Image 1 (cartoon, helix red, strand yellow):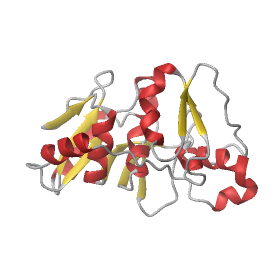
Image 2 (cartoon, one colour):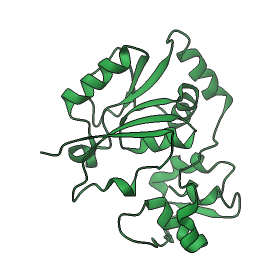
Image 3 (tube, rainbow, N blue to C red):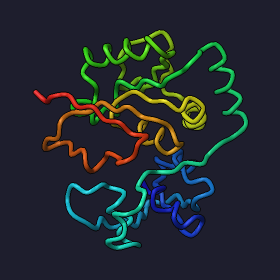
Length: 215
């Protein structure tokens, strides 16, 4: 989400990442310098509870005007080998679409698309597109013919940018597709004590949200 801040101040900030998150440094290419350190200085959240996470960060610099700004993240990363890989991978997959039925393991009870809904989403996507299912082995739903598991982040960024179409849960994959300019159709739970949609959803024509009822 910090890319939503630094895109307004390109190459003026240094982003601090802990060593275990160093792989995410590529998200800030051409936007900010990156320092890998265990001594992290956090950016304060400013604004009411329920306001979008990125907007609360932007208030540090723009005050009340932050609510007028585009809070979507931005990722500019590209490398030729990953672009070649994505191009080759998509050669035999007409009208591709990314499908992400699961999220990180720590949030699976909240944000995983319930399996019957996930399979129905896949079936609907399959009617018009070639679904490519992307997820982690740590939280895996066996669904679909074309599956990419634990894909390298560099390749994933280039793949998302080339495909430009996402169907899946409200998770980092969705935000990454948004950051590369893609269209997203997001399936998420109704608001409850563990999930508040206004903190994560983008008010933009490229983002469409559907909810299921929390039992």
